[in-house]
Amino acid sequence: MTLENNTVKKLVIPDKFKPVIGASAFYLLMMAIFIFFAPSVFLNVGMFTAVFLSLPLYIIMGLSLVFVTVAGEIDLSFPSIVPLSGLAFATTLSATHMNFWLAFLASLATGIACGLLNGFLVTKLGFSSLITTLGVNFMLIGLTQVLNKGEVRQFTEFDESPIRRALVGSWGPIPSQMFWGLGLAVILGLIFNRHQFGIHVHIAGDNPEAGRAMGVNIERVKVLCFVLVGICCALTSTVAILLNSTYYSTMGEGYLLPVLAAVFVGGTPVTGGRGTIAGLVIGATTVVFINTGVIAVGLDGYYTQLGFGLVIILSLLGHRALSGRLTR
Image (cartoon, rainbow, N blue to C red; front, side, top):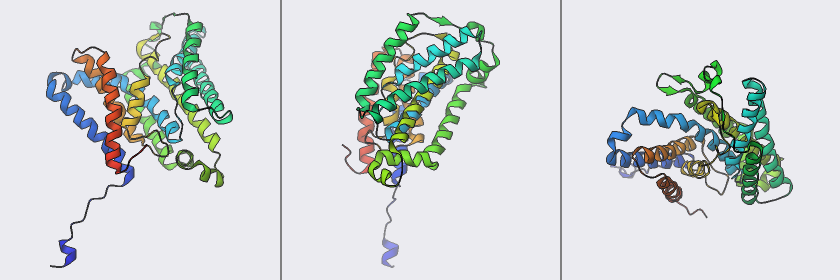
């Protein structure tokens, strides 16, 4: 026998697949544990229906955070942009006698304006994106409360609208918004991996100086990433209002930790330059199952905070092991 025949070839996994494999392995392990301890809950079709109702909201917000994080920045203001853009939607919807498209444009404009504000403060004034977006988050939460004055607005007359049925109805046992969320993931995934803008996003986070030398407008790329966050927050608020037929100014609360967990579980490190859209979808599925599962088994809601924190730490350790290198 020749030496070649005796040689055992190692299976080499391309680096770009490692985050997705890590996220998938973590999800399967989590589901195996959940099913072992509560099979009647986690093998119930109703559980998956409940997950699919809210999962698209986490996917939509998480998609935009992948872009901004890969570009080397962070955005912590998205939980406040959701209710503010939602307020614009609700106010316009009432003022125009249920004109969905004008209300949606108002929401979209509000989200874009918030993204431009973050982008300006970070790229033009040189402020830290972590501190800036955290400050903007508190500022916009306060602004929303002042403008709305704690009012809860209901839109039950919109329940039978064809637009509502199309966006948050159901196609068989699966909620419509699940298809829209996955469709947006496919579109942004193609942009992220195939389009010139996606390439520039990677360059902005990996080696911005080299990007500038090649003629890439790094500041413009980062501003557009912040704007994308605003757009996705507007989409999220619109879907959430249609889903519940209600607007309330605290609708963005509870998104910060699970959405960030979804991004990190999905294999997007805070160091920038690397990330994955497919991993984000898996990560979002993981955190929504944790959130829904904890409630379904009758545990206190505070356990979800513990779960999300553990998920973030474990995901960092898992991706470090898969990448075979330390990431500071």
